[in-house]
Picture (cartoon, rainbow, N blue to C red):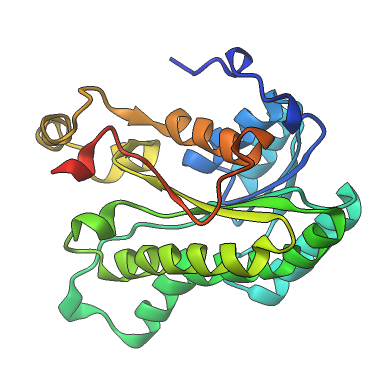
Length: 254
């Protein structure tokens, strides 16, 4: 059942300019819907054009097709959004890909690709909007991490290395940008049920394993992450910066 975002009211988000990377599917798609429901002016970036256009048509959000690993192209898109929307108030660095890989088979090109997909763009997107945010009097930047590095999950070392680095990036940028009243925080999701997870990896045994390990005995979905993003984008989180906000139903307690 879809979460009813009309039950959540962050009035400070109304008319706020929000940018979400990787917004055409999964957690990003849910964030687009969540911020639109708050009356924000939402722009989202994704390489997947067909689902991106479909989501834009359904929600009224502005879709920008872009490969986020192409940093010059990403900078151009963000500059266009700033011009179109009169600035960026909230940036959600959501894009990522949790591909599995055997450590012994990783080659330099694959390694660089894993970091580009999951780490590099988070820094360069932040860099691109920070000056405008400072000029406008501040803003909120939301990174996306993962508990996979905290738990030391095997079979995805490129992904977990990138997500661990985001923790350090968040803390450093919070210090650097705090003088401009720009808050930088990181959402750290646990085992989130998305269509990608269902199609590629979910089995009844794995599903039960997550439930057994979690303190809360229900499976998390993308709306649990989106609701945290709304809070961090709003003025209600005005005293929060440089922090990890773990949304994992208690999974990291094991």
